[in-house]
Length: 297
Image 1: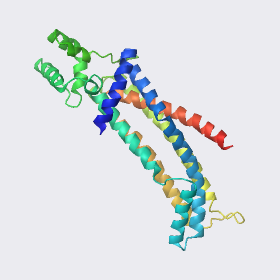
Image 2: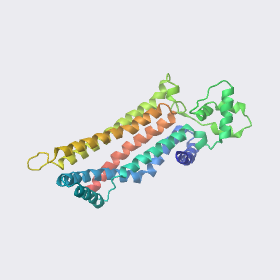
Image 3: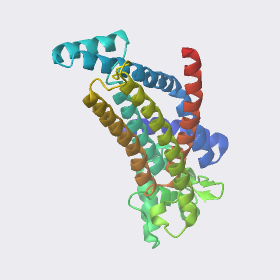
Image 4: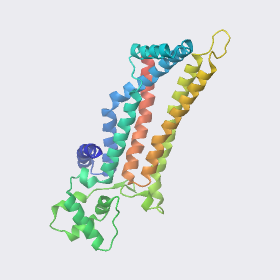
């Protein structure tokens, strides 16, 4: 499945590369296009997050009211979801989409000659063998990146082979070689610039998400506080809210940590995609939050 989407994304990335003649610019434009395509989904997700906070308030009231009648409580909660037209499992779709994008883009950036330039496996094996026979090493994980790096050598080795021109990709972006893998170039400080910027943008994104969750948690707690006495009607219910918040917080850290781990062992082109995606997501959240808030008012 990931190969299927990587192949489709490859057509788009190749078109953008032909327009810009630069791999880095092509990846940035590709990320913008992906964000635009998924913008309706993002708008719906943002509205769902805000709606969830309100539903959570009502749900806590139901849990307090029917705490001694679990069957009635579950029935009322399901009725609440139907009334509010919400799917309690809608968050799963977001996670699935993120995972598909994550691995599809990883496949694409790891093997640009296969998915972007549509180079045959026979040619890739031939060029890989020629590099190895010359005494140079070829990465088992990223042989196509090594073919791109050794383009001049392979061009000289295969002067009449038109297919080798597919490996002539401009990987330099603002002085950074996007074909480099941090794990393989530990002494080169430039390989850490994009991953570090990505970590910074991830931290900002997580802080925004945590703030939204804390706000929703506070509203849920207020929903089970007696307005007369100011005391919690059912203290254990608030403990459940805290537990949910902690779980959400942990989940919000999982994707960035996973991405950072991959970014250190993948070509910088992948980290550039994630960095651009994070920046666009932060801007998107800020804009949508204001738009949705003004619509509600």
